Image 1 (cartoon, one colour):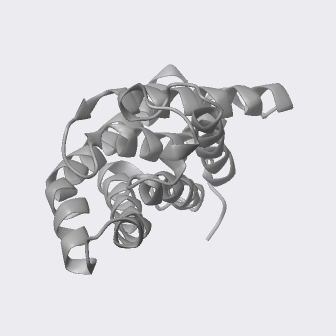
Image 2: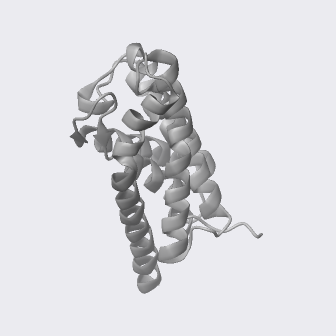
Image 3: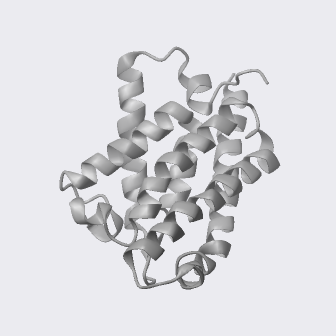
Length: 190
């Protein structure tokens, strides 16, 4: 399948090194902002991070999307209050949410990959792409929970996945609406 442009490529044209750096830093800021909007749940809070990560990947592409998440993780590890509830520090990268945090790298990459291949086009294609990469995020998240908490696999699924399924489906729909709205606005501008 032919390589497609992402929304940011179509919006800004040729990517200079400065533009790429701004996309990565902007993406990490969007993810950090999404982390601050939280619904307390145990052991993993529900935030808008998954929405932000999907948006960054779908709009920036696989490479820049993944780099934005890596920048976000580095910022948090360095002590910037970017994690859920203003959390920061290396302990977040070893705690119960770490599997999800690391999984965000693959999630952004996957969303970007699907966008670059033209599979995340239109409302339905973008929704299904966002839903797929969000569902795959549960693999490292749940496995990590079983490794660092006393939960067995079924307990980790019950506590770290099931309560978030409906919310993540809604966030995938919101991501699809935002991205397809961005494409519509870009077409109308041209």
